[in-house]
Length: 447
Image 1: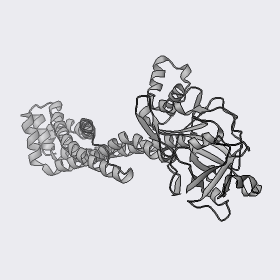
Image 2: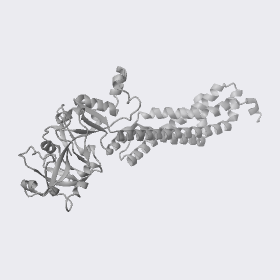
Image 3: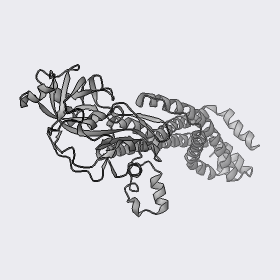
Image 4: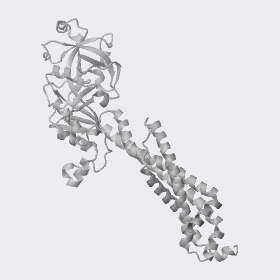
């Protein structure tokens, strides 16, 4: 009988039921889209933020303070501490190895540069103004790094410094080639263009490792970095190691890692944590925990977050997540108000039916149960339709905002149906409370 009463109400008044289901479907569509995007927004934004460049800087713990004037590092090559290139493959063995999407070593060497010298002897005999003091920045553009598990990981500035733009082409990591900063290129008489040849020797006057002669480099491109490297020469790391007499070593390592926004817990001293807290911190992709793991596999290193990048990521991600939750809450409140309005109208229209049931002895629980059953059934229908519509909306928004569609998550279906049922019940409570206070005698008299 209970099921028959509920079914008859759908047959007798389908229009109001459709309105309630539509309100729930609209609310659940927005809720589903926000939930799917909220689950993806962390990883998606983290990958988008990698266009800001590396967010970790690794140096030797005992390194000296850099001395730069006009973008040129005048610190002696033999001063300070260095890190070993052979340890770089270990970065892909840490707990959060899959979150490290790129790393690039750097070695700066003060040099004297001369354009198109006819021979190495010309460099020594040329007047001093013809030699331009600058910095040779040794690094990788696209370099395979052997990993202890036998695989190779390809990395370089194309991953850690994606905003660097090139006119011409990048150097080959194994060749005597280089790219010149846009600012430095203008310093040469008549400017500098790809195809020219630069002759380099260390700025301290010491002979390079190869036969005591100046080294010719083919300029393959002009690079724009937006920082002091615009006044430098960027070349393969092996060449900088040769000029500095530091084979297999480098001074700085930039690491680009996918991280979780920092919170109060992430900023605590791991040395003062309990074992449980330490495990939680270690197994969370905080930038501090990833840096700690890097220090463990690279002896003598000091990994520090690049704060301007890490803090920006955390602020933006927190605000986007808060916005998604606010939109979800607004959609649920709107759906609840729509359900409350239609439920109130339904209760008023069915006053006579309610009065007759109560006059025949139906308890308030039975009257409320009939209305709640109707609302829950409508919630299941509206929630299912809203889930499908929300999945499509999330896919569309993902393509428009992030360039890739959001992943379909069927596991959210029972969550959305539960939320829809709760919204329908909460929106019906006030009208149902009023229905339980109807006086059957007054209703049957037509009052």
